[in-house]
Length: 109
Image 1 (tube, rainbow, N blue to C red):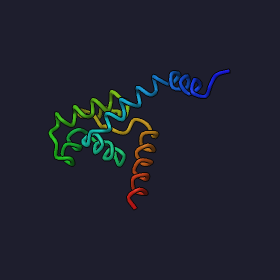
Image 2: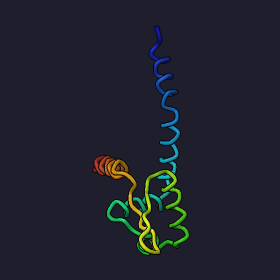
Image 3: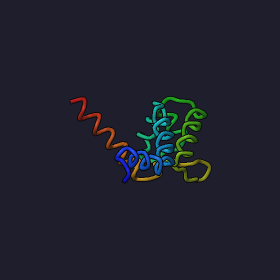
Image 4: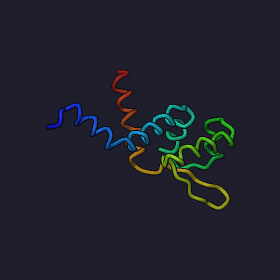
């Protein structure tokens, strides 16, 4: 019969790929500019120039941050003529961000 510790070890080993992906996402969210971009995109889809203007960051820096977020499937881009409009890739991202915000608001009150 398997011990409780062995069961837990197996449980983690079976989920190692998910844990690695979560580590990548949390690492990416450790950057304030990326967090701000996600918060903006939770409100409305935006292009690089719009994000750049609101955050007062250079367009190349915003593009670099969006590339990282796209690579992790946190945001998606849709071409609209000559520009690409970015939005949150999945409702789960919005829900996770809102849950984190609610948690922090509850802990600060």
